[in-house]
Image (cartoon, rainbow, N blue to C red; front, side):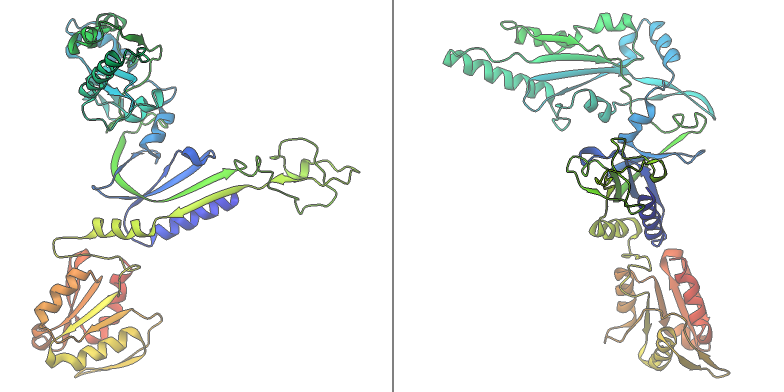
Length: 448
């Protein structure tokens, strides 16, 4: 765990360098195994993941792990259920979702309320609902959520199958199954009325009248509703949840002995050659291990972890999050250069002086002062000396996305040798004396 925590600390330091908001979320280890993992996300409206956080206690998780956090909690069960039971128009208070498996042998109808009550530290109210895809997939792993027209696909498949079997006189195929699952908030009265509704609505009974339809009502009473903004935090119970779109850029996994134990990848601890295996759990601390006269050394499984960062995804995410209509807007740590100097033909000499001051030791001479500037750290700078117009170079600099642009144009000549420092990401345009350029540029770069 010490190594895992050190890796997490390194990841936090790495993503902090980009100077844009990121979230660290508890995550499901999935097929890779282990019981602890964390995802690292950049917040962006174009992200494919939903990251859920509490504005009060700092709880952060992804949408998939949120199901585990909700286990044992009920989001307004009593008030929602009594509300449904007391309303004669219950069909208007519930909605259904229909999905099928890829092989069309399973159809699932999920029924849940159209709105639920929400109580948090800010008060109580009602909100509209939608189905939680992770909840339904956990109940029915074979469902294909990507099928856009499940009823039509289901009927077309079984219509073709029935016709093919009739022509070939083969034995009838295995019957498909219809399973209805109801959110725990749905009343028993509504469930009793709705049990055959799907067959009548879509004429499924008539379609399968010759073979019948294997129908079962699920015994489970799950929470089928997707988590929403302002829902109460499952950790502190007081704060309101916030949902943000984000893109995953890194993942750390603590695998423990998930792989090392079955593969018998073990080591002999270096805390004593006389320690031997005494058939206890490998989590026992060295101080509790017995010493024996046996020559068999004590061995423990390796503790494993795996960690990854999506380098190409980071570049794409940064470009997506920080670009504007003018062009890219790179953070300092990934920009091709930290600063670009653009000058007219008449101001080339001053531009060279500024360049030398930013990249190393140089003496800047103005009409009134001579300043000796020696950099503690080089500012990565490029001087655009291409034979293009000033306007063309400025547009190109915006397109490329340099963090800082230094301009020596007409304003430089009109304001007694002051250059213009432009930081588009911070919305700054400032006239700066030559002797102050390095200090000012360094200050802005520290924020980028």
